[in-house]
Amino acid sequence: MKIRHRVSLFSLAIFVVFKTISLFLIDNISQLSPAEALGLAYLLGTTPMLPSFFYMMTASSLAVFIISISIYISTKLSHTLFIKQMVSTGPLSLSNYFFHVIIGMLAIKLFFRKLEFAFSIEFTILYAIVFSVVIVFFSHIWCMKFKKDPLEYIMRKITG
Image (cartoon, rainbow, N blue to C red; front, side, top):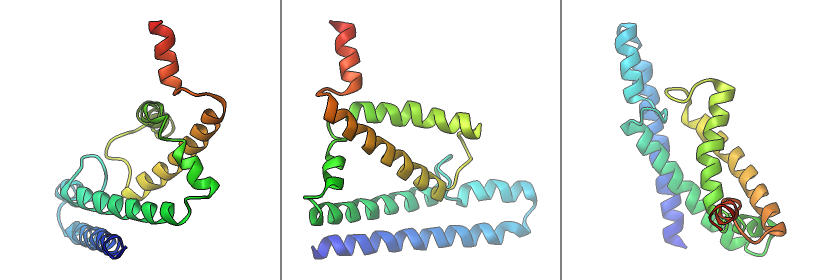
């Protein structure tokens, strides 16, 4: 328990430190020419595309924080409907991955007309949370009605 608590706090601290450094450096490059400032903003920023050092540090530390909090919540609330719904995502992992890559990215492309150099880490996290809620809901409903993953079902039908 102590290790999980320390990992949570350490990963959150890493996120805050690197996000703060990134914001500070980007704020201080405004004295440069616009072309130089833009290039450095991509290098020093935390946007997912192109993934820079600061993005990798903030995204991975935030991921570790979210995972450690998720483990804590799942151990404390293992008997609840929420956790049971989360368990439904496991058998549908193939379809969930497909929906994430194809449907999720396609939705971003259609609604925002862009994929790269476009979104902050905050938007990315919010989008991931909303998409995850939809996937959990879909998975739970699907598992109540069917025994097989939707893509597995389609592949079995095609291959006989």
